[in-house]
Amino acid sequence: MTERQYDSVWDALEDGDSLAENLKLRSRLMMAIAEYVAESGLTQTEAARKLGTTQPRLNDVIRGRIDKCTVDRLVNMLSQAGFRVDMKIHHAA
Image (tube, rainbow, N blue to C red; front, side):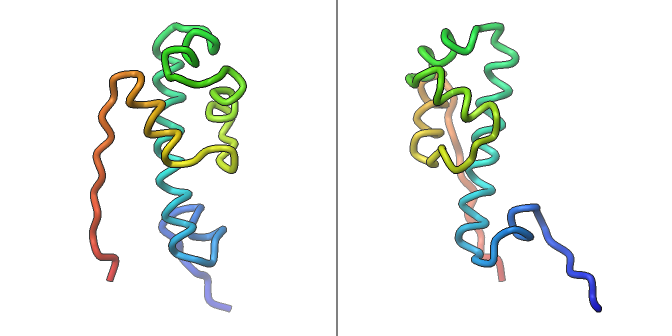
């Protein structure tokens, strides 16, 4: 039996490349938001207001509930806090 190597946990969990890429992107955005909240000293309610969302939705982000988060929502939240999200696209061949 040959052991297979994966670039990320998302690659290992998902069969489709497109879903794995989407999960990796959402994961990175969620980590940035969680880090911002942790470093801001704000309560979740205060941070949610600043991020343009609700406290329950922010709690989903902080707890890593990736199925509750879309790329659009996460980018909008970061933008509300004054962040700019840059993308790097390259051919994976």
